[in-house]
Image (cartoon, rainbow, N blue to C red):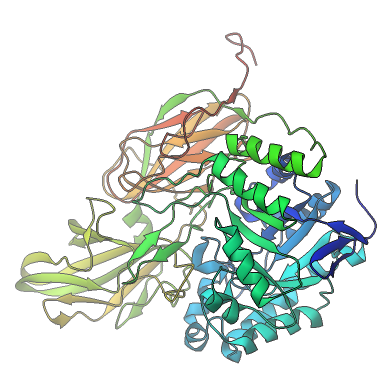
Length: 612
């Protein structure tokens, strides 16, 4: 059921929808974290939760990862189709187009190529034209998709956000005004709003006097809404991000929040007449290299895991959790309306193990790339690389002995001298296989002649929040004792999708790609576990399922949704940067570190032997 026209207005301290008092009960769902053939399933689950609205960010870098190519709005990037689908399922829509979104997404949604423009990189999220000119060109492409689907034009988009949690970053109100005015000039006529954390500093930095303000929190709602009421008296109270769960970093415990605790907080908001957006209703997955990172006070990287399950009511794989049922009961009691029944639980494949049987060395692939010369190491961004691997090759003149050190490394690296591994560097405390790059020096002792030194860096997520937003990838320098090493041949390989690997060989050693073939009778979900492997990416039929990092944890399986499988032969490729294992295990549920135990699954039906 859809309506030809919807009007959301504000009447003092309440919303009116088509003139009738209205509470927005929204669920956050990010289309770019879900296989597009599952969008309808996930939206139906949001409806079954009791929501009348769905909210989504728009990730600029997901649509335009390359500066020299137009934005892509196809497949998983087809924002218009997602908005139309939500409307067809009788859901209003809130759109948060950024340009910055945070969302634990790489670089907060800002394209990595912005960092290759030194003026723009220094002016992110400010009114400097060096940055805003890029934003304006992006909005010229994006906004027509949203504008023609607004509620006052027959669509269901009822509200659009101006930037995102800006008060947690800066105080340039000219920047916010430029964005707000740009939305209006491009045709946005529905309710505009800002959203910020629950402090006076955040609200003062992130709000505009004539723009509706919302607030974000996970608990202590009376304090948060009391603050918002003092700042904006006489307007509706809305929590734009009710953090009913949380995300995970590598090297930290898996985060959970009980359904009762979150449901009690939700019940309090609804009973007080406030509106809410559940962040997240369904988190989804950071497929490929898209998971972001935070940074500690010292700038040390805190990379986010591939799963964006978020301990949400609807799990990463679509299963309904105890939190779902607790929220549904609260919403049903409050509204007096029984939500529709959810779809059946997703089918999952039976458990099985497959052994890899093919190998292509990573350095063999790097050897065939056109190397870029430079006197000093270039960043990934200057090399035009979104995410992946860069090998910095230089020479050391022997005979000499000394200690090598690498500066500016915020990722993982291996050092090889004449092809032999001499050390691995990374972030302290995450993986015992990688020494602390900030303090570790590697001793070398070479004889006469020139010797090749390879420093190969593979990127973790870019910082998505705080003052270290915009930090680049790669290294800034390599030293032998106090002496800077100059003169590099740089080979850069993007790993967003599986590169062309050529001919497979028998299993080999060192970093490389390992292949297995899996026969599947009927497509269904699976969770893939890599026991004995260390760190890398897993590809299914060419699709990058995301990063695994077993020693760092807490995630131990990667979600492989049904649409990425095909009946018959399927190809699994593991890109291992460290120590490879032998097997890939197909599981019916995530490992316990991913999700609390006790969630039921719906297995594919058993078939008689030999049947199809």
